[in-house]
Length: 242
Ligand code: NDP
Image (cartoon, rainbow, N blue to C red; front, side):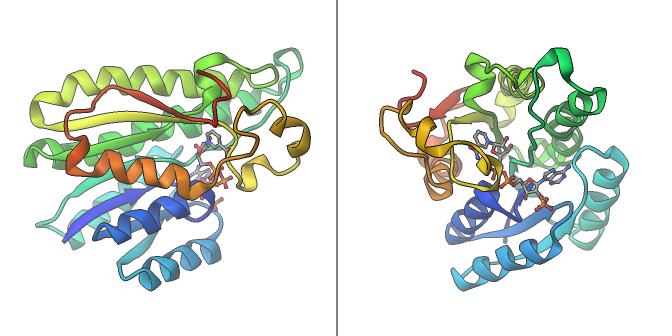
């Protein structure tokens, strides 16, 4: 059995990634923090696509929760390890910096950057020991180019990109690859409330992306065909930023 962990697998891009990995034959650990029902729906879809998995609740920003949940999983699976990790959980709390509440700054950083640190550290040992692993970090176009009203989100995603490049160098000799994906606007709950009609005009391909299109990139990066790609940031944004 090959195991993959997708943080924030209950909805949006994470859900599509879970289904994509299940189709590749992975037993998928569907992480969520609040929406148990949505996580269960993802698991149902994983099973409908011919795969299997389990749900795993923890807040990626809470180191103790992460360690407890993953230690418990390891105890139940003493001979197994997680060979694919998709650090996908993320939130946005947009505001101009001048008016940003402290909590909106720290919550976004804690979820994206803290989450990357907490979860990756907890699963990395298994990959290094087995000399095999794929880590994919969900960044954003905002982490590449910046966006007014998103200094917190840009700092988190930009930091995630830098961490991706550094970790890739640390673990390459152990045949663990680490890459980041930088999506533009993708049709999920996260973009609800944005003016889609106006934004579409700024996208050369004239539409928002689909979660399945991002998932296809993840499954490529996980595949043997991508074994020589590491430390990269791959954009998927309809030409929004090149
Ligand atoms: P959604 O808002 O649709 O889903 C967010 C997911 O993250 C949910 O599964 C949610 O779980 C989970 N999550 C949030 N906080 C935590 C936490 N502290 N611990 C564990 N899980 C958590 O987001 P998207 O699918 O749109 O985004 C997925 C990733 O892609 C994010 O990192 C986002 O920044 C990035 N991205 C998205 C873009 C877009 O346009 N949609 C563009 C660029 C990047 P629960 O259901 O339990 O709340």
